Length: 173
Image (cartoon, rainbow, N blue to C red):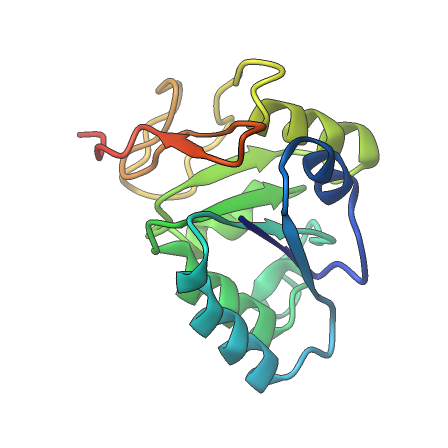
């Protein structure tokens, strides 16, 4: 399993918490200024893992250049990765980036990007706490507010401490 922290300068609370429960978790970080070749290498390497957790950090509250504080290279990586069956997007802090990622197959949204919320997100992924809540907005036209547990075309992931992926892989209708 691989954790990719986009717009993170180094380790994050989610990664540190997941490392405690997932044996052999690899961490890679894609801070501002990451090169296109680094991004391409990450895309090429996604196939080497059963699960790639792409965790997006440091988003702004406003579009700022259309990517909510991400560089175009970072956004391009996320967009290319999002539609793959072995990629889970963790969107930390701003749901509205999702309107540009409606093709994502697996998404977990947290409305804050602080240590407390990141630790809670890791606990949900590890199965310590059940997934709760619903989206307060529908950024994609085929998403329905209040649908539980997931919008159409997504799946819920559960990462066990034995490093296995258990997922509802059927597309929602």
